[in-house]
Image: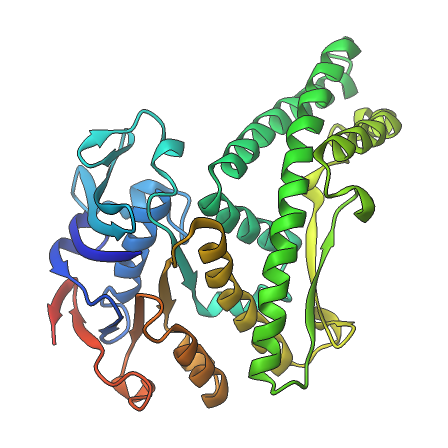
Length: 371
């Protein structure tokens, strides 16, 4: 998968951009606060119809403008497709090959990207909520079914929590309606847990190999999926559905008392185990960074495994955060395999013996030019 051509109109600090890219390594160079990250963000938005930096889409619109437009020509094994996203103060509209998509869910999955930014180095020791967002964002790109189940689960979870609060304050008494919401939540929750268990197991295998390569065999890594359902049941969605139903029944009185759902995948987490220890709590900073790098590189392999194509990789000033050994492993891992966009303030951060002829673009006050 490749992004061949990008056009921006009124996006962040860019009035207009119209450029083509190398199918291999593209380096965006410039001083801080010139728009390098904004350009990477626009590619991310083109893929996922949302920003990784803000939940307020209006911030993506250039100051004083009515709308922002991001469009790109994407090459896949199935052919070339034009994607377009228009962001206005009224909302978002998405088009594929000039055909407007009635739902954003029908747009997602046509262009896959993986972003690696300095804050991703904290994924290992960050919050469970952050790791759940990471899982849902990446797995949702790979599987429309996962994205649908996640959307449905969130809808029913919101409805159920609202109704539990009504029961708590005696504004409602109908437990039959609660049972209906609970059954739907268990059904979609079972699909999510089963999918997470399968995908995390595959991703863990990829990450384990990468961790061993980086550390020359000194460190073993595996993922430990933390969910309320017994590990022996996670491979069968029907068994997970039954188990969730039983847990909801046991917790119903407490849930009404607290006015919130206490069971389900919204409470999941992933632990990264290095040499039989939770690296977040017992690992060195170096081990944590190596693990984060292994996790991000494993994403690339997992996406290829699930979709049949490599994603586009976005590296936002991450090389400066890695030491020479980890930087070398990252660059060698992506060389000639994955189209990559990376930002930097200086070409001195690029190891020329690994990337001999990158396409270099100068970013200066919201303008982009081939260097």
